[in-house]
Image 1: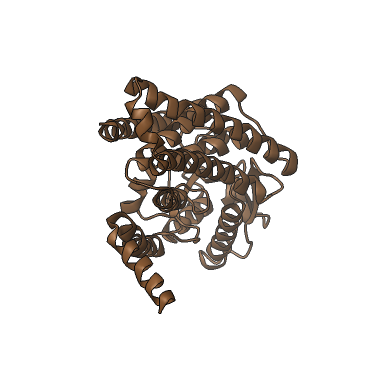
Image 2 (image 1 turned 60 degrees about the vertical axis):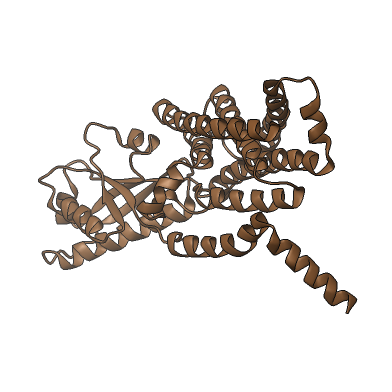
Length: 361
């Protein structure tokens, strides 16, 4: 009887709290519906460019067949060198005809062409190679009675040995930093609320701005320190390359750390204790991770949900880490995604400071 009373009391107490009720009952259902429909490991929406002459019939047929397969999206790369097109993120892969065209090489029974692929994501690169190989074989065996198959030679950029860790580790770096900073910030403030020390801070003769900065700067420093720790671990244990500028890497991480801290402060304004803080952090971080491109390419996400990924600062941070470490950091690419992080930071800061002032009052 006593045990049953305890169980009943805990269930009623949990459901009576509207915040916990939403987290426990509604959010899991929304998450499984959202991600069950939206996320897929299928390699789709591959941005494909082509470098061949209009008169090269075989290359044209292969390119058109690739686009018609609905795995690839046609991208105009005219005037852009192949390596630069991939470095800037304009395309994921390009097919390049040899001098004289693929049609002539097929006529000499030595058909060949080159496939240049962004191999930072190994599974995606291997799948792209398989798609093009299969499409090229079908085109040559069915179109015009050609007997000679086209030998597609794949060249893997940024990860020539096709190491899976080269793609996974940068995503883990972004994930670890996000989890650490947001949970530390949110639970720290929630702990002070729960213990009553938050009221002491409020009643002290301290300016509100000082309180907010005092809650922001320490965790930003912790986040930056964690960035160095995780980076050194990636370089030492996984032979992760570092091809970009360390200064750009540091500045970009500073932008994101500040954004993550402010998001943690914003979440703390909606919770009253550490239990709520942990649940809220888990839900928010899970959504951010799934829409960050760390495990599922953003291009695989449906368009109606992709806009949420574009608004996700963690997605831009993950893309920037991979671009700086593996590709060397294309300046236009870095500026574009840094501006996106700063825009998200501005919105989050406005909301966090507004909510925090209400809490102080």
